[in-house]
Length: 89
Length: 240
Image (cartoon, rainbow over all chains, first blue to last red; front, side, top):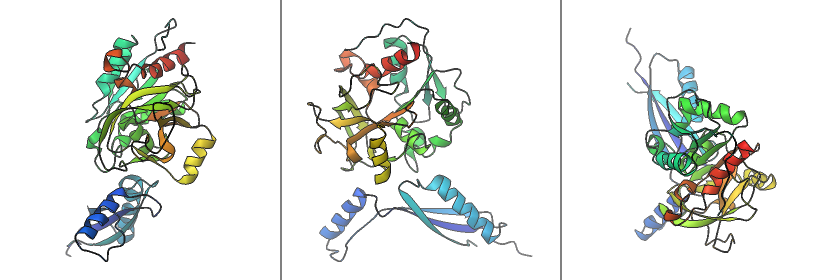
């Protein structure tokens, strides 16, 4: 039987809504000056691609991603995360 | 300027060193040469503090500040020993990057974020001593002004509003940015820190973190020796 490909977790980290983001404000300003007049707000975050062993079950892989995001990838004082999990092939 | 008669036993200092620390030698110099106290450096892979009485987590860019400032350093073996030392009520001070690491590891609340200006700021300024009931400010008088430099890109103290209110209520704000007259104004706040917070302590008051560099202002030839009182304070608090 063909072994399942690795899992690919795409973890998106963003600032909590009440946290000030001066970087996002600068980007928003630049976009405005370049004529992107529809832009109302920009907030800058981080994106992680994490490849995990394919032999993990989906629930186990999800659990691992949640654990590593909460423990390492984010600072829970200021950040939150979302993720998707798919077979990397 | 304060001077201390060191009459009791020597106070043993340890300075943690991570790949990318760059203020560790300054700290060791002040402790060893200026104060004449025993000091040793502790590589981040060490699991023991070798009997140190005081731990200094110095400035720099530990582990390149990758991910977030202090985010990787917090998992170093030496930080487990530092946490145990802190939990035992013994003095720990985090300076600049060291403050960021103490926040990441959870010994102090909050986080240091990018300066409001998005610029790295390196300049002398004033802070006001708000509390003298920590081991690092015991020789200060309330409201004392300390002139010392900051040198950081990420020093904007940020925490949930209720956390900051709690810090204020419990007297955990130890240092506040201010002007030369001691007034904390928006103009004297270099990085946009909430409530002009330059340094805080934990609830037990033995762990102190601050963004400015007292070790860079501990000798007259550096244009200010104001910062020395913080190191003299901890020696005094352990020998009296």
